[in-house]
Length: 113
Image 1 (tube, rainbow, N blue to C red):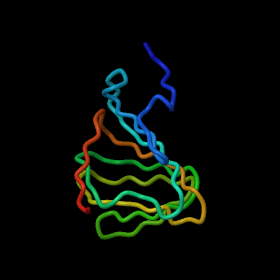
Image 2 (cartoon, one colour):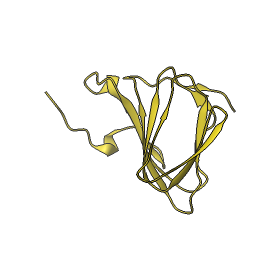
Image 3 (cartoon, one colour):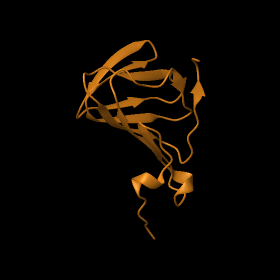
Image 4 (cartoon, one colour):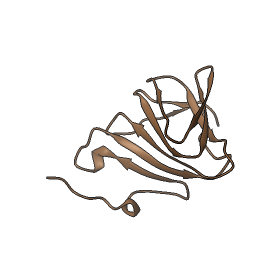
């Protein structure tokens, strides 16, 4: 049977809400709901699964392997498993995006301090 989860019930900080599927009916997906000010973003990291970024508002600059990729509202970026990546809100306003982890449990290896 399905169930509704209130966003505010999820672990969160000022910019991100974290949903891990294994905590919610064993869903085989996890994600962050991001609402970040300019310049914010995580350091270089990898995951043992693909990560899909759905940009809803703003401009986000990604480093994916050796490539720099600009993504804007309405675009989707797929980062393959094991590829180092990071991003920064490169726009003048807030960036809103959903960062989908293709796993019921998040696993991150941080490559920068």
